[in-house]
Image (cartoon, rainbow, N blue to C red; front, side, top):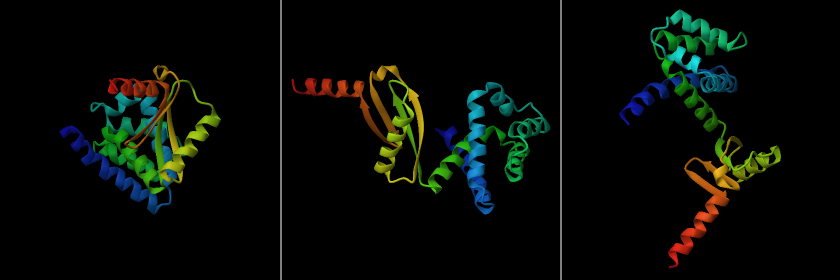
Length: 185
């Protein structure tokens, strides 16, 4: 727990500073897309993650890789922010900073993140219906779906928004029936 507090003490101020910069330059959405791209890269490439996290890699090498990964279209302010993280030896917190920035962007735009787990892959129409339902339930302007599949659900979906869980899965229904039957004895 202490480690998480220490990480938060680094991540939150840097993410907040990046948000302030993004708002002052009217580039919140662009910075959010840059952060999402970096988060995706962290997920997809163990090599990138270990390179960024490695304290033995020279700062100039890290800057070169970051510039190459971000490409020429990346905003100069965003790239300079990444370079600042390298110079201050805070680049190891990049993933957390990006996650926090995206969370701040969602909050700013009243966007809700919904984790959706289904027994089978969802169709585009089903995803849209779930997004509409979550939007109605939460009053959000928009909904981002984080979709995964779990065959153990048997059928249906489980939707998690913040701390609320909506279990419309067959497994959940069977569990509730079982609890009712056991409770009535």
